[in-house]
Length: 71
Image (tube, rainbow, N blue to C red):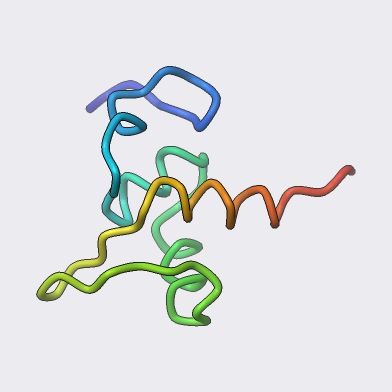
């Protein structure tokens, strides 16, 4: 996946119910570290599947909307 997707663009990732940490970072335009930080702080809900996380696109949206503020 070379293209950069955001939450506002039509992304094939948005058609899924859950994404990986890396995919979540791509969707909101940040890095894996920021997503993991939110997971470990329990700010962002996720399902643990083996040694990977599955993050609901709906939960990612809610978390991201809560982080947005006017600059």
